[in-house]
Image (cartoon, rainbow over all chains, first blue to last red; front, top):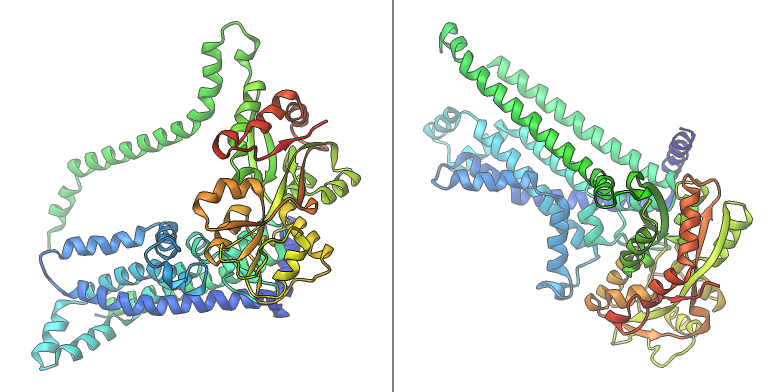
Length: 240
Length: 305
């Protein structure tokens, strides 16, 4: 118990004095996950909204694929990205393995299905009457789409936030394609999750706990936003 | 809207039967899973009792022996032959190996989270014994470290025979060098060589992976860099790497492994038995023949007295 308490105290000290090493790892985590989620949104929201609205014969199958992405083991994503980017792989010429781009790619692939699936559910649950009414009143397809996005905006926030949470807390994939590399002065591919593994193994529990506290904090914020979204949604349906 | 009475009827017998069946299937499934997990330990004891009738060991249940060792012994594949051989000689033990760096293994020993250690960090081992954390220590085997790098040799250390010279060339920064950076035995040796060369390595070219030898070799290979590796792990990973040996056979790269019985270990007898076996003729023979078939040379050279 003393060990846990001491680690927390020392961790808070590292965080509040903005220890260089801790801050560089933190910033890299935030950077890679934010960029990954942005890519995830660019890919996932159009896909999810199209699937949520369109009605075509193979829709069920495609939707099932997207939902499978939710259950996709992230470490498998890491394995596949590794094999693609390795020197012996098809994209080896890019020399992206063990660099930040590799981690961003892995995190994008992890967060994209999550964002798409939630977006699909969100767009699918907007009553059809809303859409037909808008079109009937003379709105263009693009205007209708934007309006539907407004209707589903709270769920879209939930989608992005969940995708971010999944990306930033991923360990296996990021360890495999990133390599947890740092120089004595700067950070190359070391993020919070891989740093926790290393620091725990080496017995530096204070540093591990510092990253752990930040990740817990991020998880807390994610849950906060999701709960707000859920309450907001409930409130809206009660009114109607 | 369905009338309430109709809705309630649907929730009658058929629904209840279906739910009961589903629940039963779920419970059975969980039980099967749990039984499957417990099966592993059950069959080892029951197996012994059915095949060996009348022998004293038929009623012996295995005790755990926690061995903390290094990633180099694990990654080279030595444990895949060593552990089964030990367990055949001493069937009362079930060896559980934790492969971490030497530094962390010694820490585990300090905290009594391991019973016996097999590490290669002589200076740290001496401190460990002097501090009283170990009851007994013996030399077991040795191999050597090598400096590996890409065939294109961007740092230009071709032909060098001294590790300190090669490290000095690396410090010029023309190529990347990957350090384990994890307080392992290999890391300790690497830092000792830098010290012997009077260099404090730092800069963009000096990078740390914080991981085991296998992983560090992989990173080094991908990034066309250099690293210090033990010969065993290098040889066993060679197939999937694009690295060549740059410097070898320098006396400073000699790598001695030691076995230590942890003071106050939970399974002290098991630890002592392990030390006895691994330094015995039988154990030394297992070590000395490991790798000869696959690589044409022994990966570790036994040298217990």
